[in-house]
Image 1 (cartoon, rainbow over the protein chains, first blue to last red):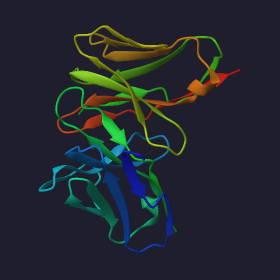
Image 2: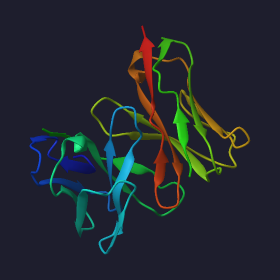
Image 3: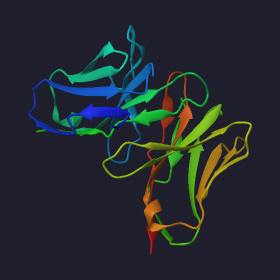
Image 4: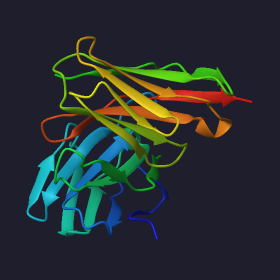
Length: 114
Length: 110
């Protein structure tokens, strides 16, 4: 089984709808991240969490919210989806225990907002 | 703020040749730099990490160099194969996150 899973893998929705993307991990990592990826742009950080009680905004948090339900679960919500939120969304984890704490990514969710 | 530049144009390389990808950064030298591979529709996968006090790091056919004077890292794939075709991302450590380049698409032609 994959260490980092995301659901759904693909979602098409309409403007104004509320959408939740879910992420689960079995790596036991404390740090979890939500990114979006657009063609020609690097991964941009939406929110990150260092543990269940520590949630922080990234560079592009407007229009998004998150919930860290447990160490293993981190959900991203779009309260009222708009077309420019159409993108590929990735969840990632990181052990955070040292300089070798690389990130482990989920398979991504392709979101289309019509 | 730290910015990362990777060649946005696809790099076409003949099978068997060495592919070299470039990652340039603009501000402070990071403590370490990472390279990831991303296949279409999938999440990035970690390949190599190099620290600021390391000039070179190797893993099988992969080699990464780190020049803090030039503010540049080079990523080499020797004896390239069509299966190496993918987008390669570099990332630097920031205050609380990794800072990512947009990636370079590598195409290895048979």
